[in-house]
Amino acid sequence: MKGEILKNYVNGKWVESESEKTRDVINPAIGELLAKTPMSTSREVNQAIEAAKEAFWKWRTTPAQSRIRYLFDFRDALEENFEELAEITTLEHGKIIDESIGEYRRTIENVEVATSIPSLQLGYNFEDVASGIDEMVIKQPLGVFFCVAPFNFPAMVPSWFWPYAIATGNTYIVKPSDQCPLTMVKQFELLDEIGLPKGVINLVHGGAEAVNTLIESPDTIGMSFVGSTKVGKLLYKKCGEAGKRVQVQGGAKNFITVMPDANLERTVPNLITSFLGNTGQRCLAGGVLLAVGDIYESLKDAILESAKKIKVGDGLDESVHLGPLASEAGMKNVLRIIETGIDEGAELILDGRNVEVEDKLSKGFFIGPTIFDKVTPEMTIAKDEIFGPVIPIIQVKNLNNAIDIIHANPYGNASSIFTSDGKTAREYQYNVRAGNIGINVGVAAPIATFPFSGMKDSFKGDLHGQGKNAVDFFTEEKVVITRWF
Ligand code: NAD
Image (cartoon, rainbow, N blue to C red; front, side, top):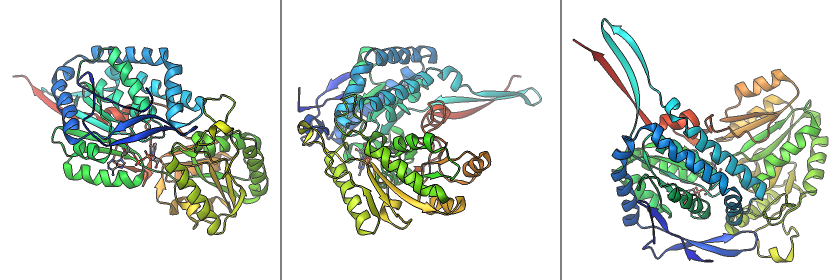
């Protein structure tokens, strides 16, 4: 039903929110209302916390082998409903269907990795630490955890956390993006069908009030946040004050360096995907193109030529390469940043404003590929996260100049280099302070067994999402020292 107010999923049941405040969920390709997200009240959030707390001990004492049966079933449900799931994500987010499919492949991968918890959660021991005394470490779950998720990967980002949290024996609350909540609603319908014990996993919609309640509750253990650095830093501080475990994956400005010896033919398609994929709304998106030495002219021409060929339109249309921005506010923000680029003196060599789309998409939030030349490191478009299909190009003399520009930026999420020289690549990987490094790879997205890293203002905390990092985040190491008389 179009425009319905979404329900929360608490203690194994779908419940209507008592809140009168809602946010519209819009299909960004056509500007049409899909649903309304309720801004859940503190009282409602506390009910979810209570349910998760109540469920914890029984779940924690359920053998891991039994706990992961549910994840195997959920994985099967994701595969069986794959097409519908991907379509829902494209409908509410706008990304092209291939990108939703890619997002769901990584989501499933995370569920699969979490099913190996009996191996991942192993402790360790050592005998005869003193005569007749043995010592061991056991990794135990702690209680109720929650995540606060962004709009840009509404399926994948929560999967960096919750499958590991419940597999290790914790209970969980997902607070999805209020802008793109339908993706997790569909996943919770599937979770409901597989019959997890009530309270083990809960879904609460909302905004700041819901999140603050989750942080301030004495009954929650920790938060995984993914979103903008501004909100992330605020919540990191609040979590510190409340004594919570916390991991904050924030915003980004990813520099992509192209060396004079790069293989241009193979590099350009990678750059196009890096800067324009997901309509630039990726935390791993290329943010600035650093063209080193004499590759600058040919690289600029090749990028321009490729970007001009990109078809913009509704992500559900399989012939389309670039979908809309996910929201009107997001589109307006990118338009504002493009204006700033012009005002600050960069040269707009491809203008994506007023891009032509089919008539039926006239109310959609479209911006076509946009390229700025003659960009300097001080310009706003070279420093701030744009989160749209914009490619700022800076010409630099050599690798050291490129690394200096990268290090002057406060973010450190990802960075890539394109080169044919192993020594140059090694120098880059060795020196550049960014959490995810690509070598001839434009989107350095780690598979689920590796941490989704990040540094500087792109990450606050110690342990990242995915794989072994997630297992450590959701468990506590207890040391047992044993002597038998
Ligand atoms: P956002 O910060 O606006 O929102 C993220 C979440 O925080 C949402 O669930 C939102 O409801 C909640 N929130 C917003 N304001 C709040 C407040 N004042 N108090 C409490 N909660 C609040 O981010 P977004 O626009 O949804 O996502 C885009 C950002 O996420 C980009 O900066 C992108 O780089 C970043 N991101 C980072 C990673 C990563 O791994 N580093 C991955 C994906 C996205």
